[in-house]
Amino acid sequence: MINYRILNRRHKYILFPLFLSIFCVEKSLASELLSKTRSTKEEALRFIAQIDQTKKSELWPNVKPKLFYDNLKLNLENPESFYPGRSTNFCSYGAISYLVMEKDPLGYVKFMNELFDKGEASFNNNKFKPSKEILQAAGTLKFKGVLDIRHAEQVWFFVLADKFKGYLNFFDKKYHEGDENTFWAATNLSKFDRMVNRLCGVHVSAVGSDLIKPWVKDVYSYLKKRIDSNTVSLYINNRIIHKKNHDKVKLSIPTHYIILRQISKQGDMITLRYWDYGGETEMQISGRTLKKIIFGIITIDK
Amino acid sequence: MIRSLPIILIVFSLLTDSCSTRIISNNYYQEQKGTVDSIESHYEKLNAIKPFALAFTDKELNILSIEMISDTLTRIYEFNIAEQRLGDTLLKYNYDTSGIHYLVRKMQQTKVTWINSVDYYVNDQPQQLIYLSIKPVTIRYLFSPPKYIALGYFRSAQSFDEKGRLLDNRRTKRIRKIKGQVFYKITDRICYTITEKYR
Image (cartoon, rainbow over all chains, first blue to last red; front, side):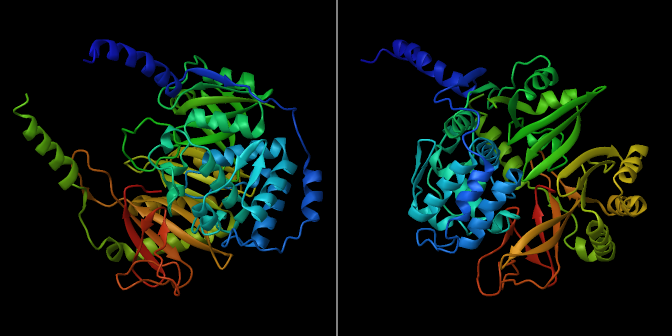
């Protein structure tokens, strides 16, 4: 006979660390640390100049070579141009792209070229072998803004979403048409930290969680202290600052990843300057709203 | 408590499922056609000079969020429309102050909550669509979501299927969704949808 009392007690021990991982307060990832920057833009441009940019890949039937290589060149010339698309759940992959381009532009271009040629490749010891659904889907996105004609970014976002999985992807692991807008592409905080650590090979520390806001008394001072010496990414509830309906009661959950570039304060008004969706945005909010929107503060070594 | 559970469940399901928000007028666009079309054309002219987007973020349509868009930076500010700061900010960033004030007044009168220009691509060439949302008079029940009428103004004639749904192009029968919504024909250049989000 099962002793339910013991089982319940044991369950508590199993559930406790599980909850900790979901509602984590503070944690850091520091495996496989690499030097600050691994390559330069010039090296990457020299590499791309010697590639045959007209070759078609039968593995990626909908990816146009011209759009693919033009997009890679744009990523090198302007790393801020990465655009995760309108109404998609690719924002976390966009933020990661920005970090990858800072660290290793040559690695990115070599990886993308190999992926295009062979349908599989490795980036920073992470092996990517996209499923056949992904090979078919890249190049077909429509009405996502400029992402429609950014075929390299479509490939990159799709393979990242296909490779890295968190608990939000548990019920939707296999890609189906339109899944770029669904939980298939969603990213929880620990998945984001893991992706940054594994792709950029840098030390990542985070406060906050997917449901509970970070226990930071003065958010402004906390961010200000870190922004000069680190790259700071924020996991925010974008619905508060980018309202989509007029209801006063809103679900308090994080929905968006941004890279914080500058922060300043005048009286109670805080001016944030951040990167998301292919460019920088400047916004003024109160200290109270800042505290309200932030669910995760991810500090990444430069 | 257990005995009354089915009643509670029935009441709850009635409140959530069957009592969805109802828009009073089924003919909102035709009734407001002249004003809404003039808002769109006025915005199109101003936006071509210096891109921007406008949204009313409160129910009373007094708080205005303005996105001032340039190649390198998007500035987002929120003002009460009565505030002097709105005019000062528009002036500072070289926007047509009187033109935008006129547009804001017209939007407020017609209950247009959001206006924006959306880019899309046909044969890899950029196209533009002006997207605006209207907050209609509705009957709303407890737990039912809000409803808005969204209008899409294309610059050229579009393809629709026999049910009036917007298609990707003439050759395919693939339905084109804008922000995840199916749009329906009003004219060959204008289409609409009913949505829970105004942007």
